[in-house]
Image 1 (tube, rainbow, N blue to C red):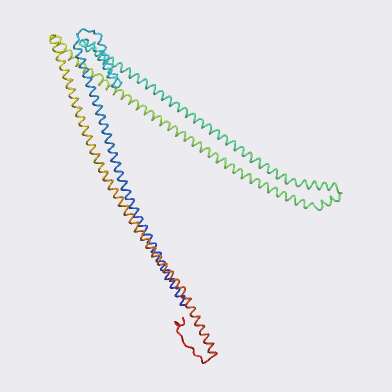
Image 2 (image 1 turned 135 degrees about the vertical axis):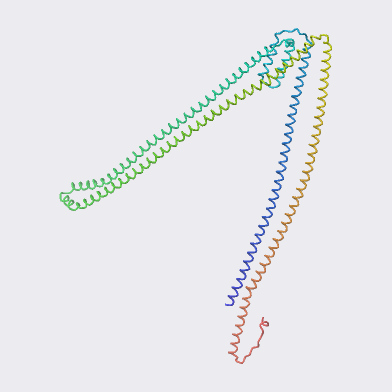
Amino acid sequence: MLQVKSEFHIKKSYFIYWKLQLHQIIVNRDIEKAKLQSIELVKKEYNAKQFYETSLVKRCFSNWQRNIQMQKTTRDQLERESLRHGKEIEFLNNLEIFLSNNEMKTFTGNDNNDETVHSGSCKCLNDKKPQKLKTTSSDQLNLKSMNSFDSVINLKPDNFSVDHSKSNGKMNHKVLTQSNSMKSYLNQTILHQRNIITAQNQQIHELKTAHLYSEWLLEVRTRELTKKILQNTVTKNNETDKTSESAEPLTRIGNDANVHDHSLMTLILAEHYYKPEMEERAAERARRHALQEERRRENEQKKKEELAKQLEEEAYRIKQEKKMLIIAQKEKRIREEELRQQKELRLAHQRELNTKVTIHRNISCLRYYGFKPWMKYVTRQHELVEMMQCYHNKVVMRNVFHTWLLVVQIKYEQEDKFVQHHYNLFLMKKIISALRKACNVSKEKEVYAYTWYCQQLLYRSFTLWIQYITELCIRQLQQDEIAVEHYKRHLLDVHFKVWTHFPCIQRNQREREYRREQFRKCLLDIIPDFNPPKYDDNETD
């Protein structure tokens, strides 16, 4: 009992120790998982920081690109404005040259050339071409009016009113042509829509015909199924009747043959002996026939009920399909009406917009190509008339006036050249300063980027070094833990071996003592006065 208790206590202690070791291993694993999670969190934070920094760099780069595009667009606009300004200056110079050339000529001229000038003004009203064509048309008008300058003096407001009415007539004609073209386009769209509607109606008619054809086929199939079922039932009943009746003639034919072969005595004996058996058989046949008829009737009733259910289901399905078709047709009609209304509203809105656009265009054309040039032309002509009257009154001052005009022209040319040269120098200085600023900014950005890159490299190397050291420490700790566990297991093995060897030693000692006692008893039996010496256990060992 003591040995059992000691063994139980030893096992219990080992079991508790094993539990503690398992608990410690689980705790160590949880600690390792927590460490790994912390390392992953640090990595994720680092990746998030990198992503945020890259996104900032991308945003800065995109803003820089946008600024460059805006600068390019502003430069293009400035260049266009400068070109337009230059063209305007050239146009004014050409007008001044034209006026100077006309002043050199005499007043003898044909009055028939007045219509060319007014036709030119009318053309300006309805001109829709780009600026290049406008410049060419203005040059042609200048060339035509070189010979008709003398006739400009004799112009009257009646002529201007007539030409303006002509220009209005031309504008109305163009508006009518545009409206006719729009009408033709609208007619084409209406025809296209009608064709689409007719195609949709044809599709609906085809679907209806297909649905009617499917219903007709279903009815035909149901009729054929009912006919087949009835034929099968009739054939089965006939077969059962034939099988029941076929047994009776065979017996009867055999009996008749025997009757003809044998004598009348055999007939009487057969009738006397086999009559009750025949009656029993006939009763059994009648009972079987009645049962078969009842079963047949029950089967027919079941089949009829199933057919009725199938027909009801088919009728319900056909009704549901018809309802769905009607609902789909209604929805389609509603959609078509909504689409038609939307198209009508769009067309009305488009017409309103077209009318507004035409009105605005006519007003703008009249303003910029009719009224303003006409007013400028009238004012200029009044000035020229006054100048020519003074010239007519002072013919003596002709040469002086010519010289004065030449001097003024030369002066204007010199001033224009000086202004253009100064403007070009100013633009060059501005461009050079902008380029310098851009270069300085780019250099600063490069320096900042290089420093930031170096810092990032240092930060990455430092983080990698820290990760490497942490991994080495973790590995060393793991190796130490493994060594401790190995040492503990080795001690357990040694103690277990000693513990297993100790009972064998005790058993051997007990056997040895038992043998000694037996030997002593034998000696006492043989030699009663025998006193053996007492030896210690250590000496005997």
